[in-house]
Image 1: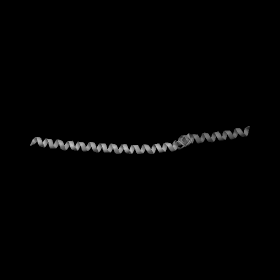
Image 2: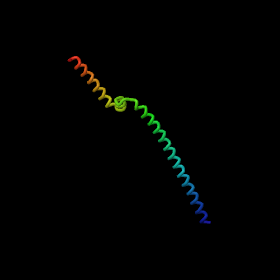
Image 3: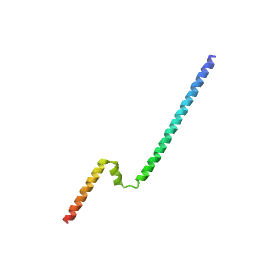
Length: 87
C-alpha cells in the first residue's frame, strides 16, 4: 500500500514536471516568435533607411552631431561666400 502511494506521488510529480517543461517550451517558442517578428520589422526598417544618405542618417540619429554638421555647413557656406566676393 505504501509503495503504491509513493508511486502515485512520484507519477503526479513527474506529470507536473512534464507540464512545467511543456509550458516552458511553449513560452520559449512564443518569445522566439516575437523575436523573429521584431527582426523582420527591423530588417524592413533597415531596408528603408538604405535609401537615405549618410548625412541624413547622421543628423537624425544624433542631435549633437547634427548641430556640428549644421554649424560646419553654415561656416563653409559663409567662407565660400566671402572667398567668392574677395576674388
